[in-house]
Each structure stands twice: as C-alpha cells, then as structure tokens.
Length: 311
Image 1 (cartoon, rainbow, N blue to C red):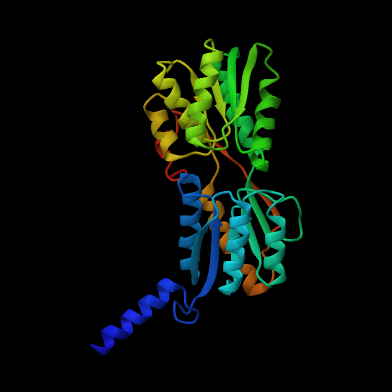
Image 2 (spheres, helix red, strand yellow):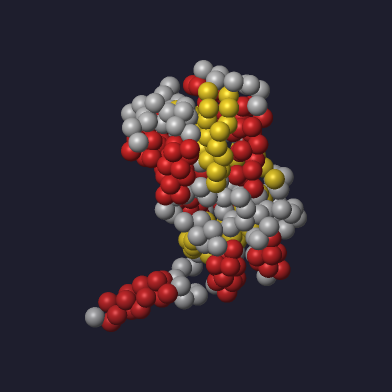
C-alpha cells in the first residue's frame, strides 16, 4: 500500500513538473507553433525522440504563432531550469528578445525552420534552404503548366521570413516565363481554412485560372478542397513542406507536387547540437545552417513519410 502511494506521489510530481522529482534527466524545452499543422507536430516529435535518446527530459510547448505566448513559454522554460531550448519561432523580429532573455539566464537556444533577425543570440539557426526549395517547386510548376497560363499564389504569414523567401524563389523562376501570368496573390497565413476561403474568392474573380502555387502544404490542401468543391480539379496545385496529406493527394492524382523540407531531421539535429554544446561549449557548426529541400511528385511520393524520404 505504501509503495502504491509513493508511486502515485511520484507520478503526480512528473505531471506537475516538480523539480527534482519528475526526472533525473536535464530538461529540454521544445517550443513550436500549433501541432494542428503536421509539420510542427513532426518537429516536436522528432526533437522529443532525440532528446530522450540523449538523456534529456523533453518539455513540449506550443506558442500558436503568438509572440506574447511564446515569451511566457520562455519564462516557463527559464523557471523550470531548462538546460536548452529548441525553438520554431513566432516571428523573426518578435522572438529576438525572448532568445536574448534565455541567453541572459544561461540557457542556449537552438532555432529550427525559422530564423530570427539577428545573429549571436541563438547558438544555432537550422533552416531549410527555402529559396532553393521554392525554385524546385516553381520549376516543376512551370513544367506542369506547360510554361503558360494564369495562376495564383498563396502566401504564408507575412511576419514569417520563410514566406517572403519562398515567394521570392517562386518569382525569380516564374518571371522567366512571359506566358505565365499571375492573376492573384493573397496571404492565407499558413492556414488551410483561410486558403479554402481565399481560393473561393480567387476562383470567382478569375474563373480562367489554371494553376495555384502555395507557400506551404496546409494552404495547398485548403486550395485543393475549394477547387474540388467547385469542380475544378483541372487546376494544377503545387505545395511546399512534404506533408503526408499532400503525399496522399499526389498519389491520388490531386495535388501535383510539393517540396520536402526535412522537419524531423532538422529538429533532431538541433537537439544533437544542443547536447554537444552543453558538453563541450561548441556545436562544431556555424550558427546559420541550411538544409536543402527535395522535390516530391508522383515519381517519389511513395517514399515520403513524416517529412522524410525512406531509403
């Protein structure tokens, strides 16, 4: 009976996050946007799995792309005595102060997916080569469109550096083809629901549209749902991320292509570098690191699983 009571007390301490009781392992905070987006869920899962493997206790937190909430989560990580923070941030400019606050408290930050505006504050900033990936996606889009026709672009969240980089990569390729005519460009804030609504509006104003190039897969899925509802499955849609949802759509002949950015591996690399930094004071790499993206289409969609290509 006493043993059962002690076990219950220990479990309660784990759930409450009581210091010294939850685990003998060092705490690692993993902070991302909402897990409603499978990309961010994969990041959190990848980082947590690697953290456990390396002897850390992962503390998974979600900021919902709210910089104020993110700041509060940094306070939580600091108060809980986290040894390191792995972060997919809530805004390039708005995040700098939070990362600096953690640094002042002796807690190093390792950024993934999204950069911040300054260097020398985070230890690592590991991001996908969004420009290279966008060019891959745009080149495939041009090929699928037969190098001509009216198209729309769905932009990501304007405060997110990645949204601008991807859009710039698309533009630099598509502008080389004078018969490719962009008739609409709207932000859907990375949201499937907003993309559905934006696509409905774009279709009403531009019924002649033949293609949609999207800043991420979640918006591509929203656009495709709107096109299906309107009976316009002839419209070519290309995304960016490499999600399982778009993989499945590609295999069914729906969305035509996406660009894989290795979210799972990126998150694990951040944890590995955090471990090395805590052990040696160095990561062995530059602060800013780019990971190349891979085109996914009907030829290799079968190999895609959870933002990684299977051998």
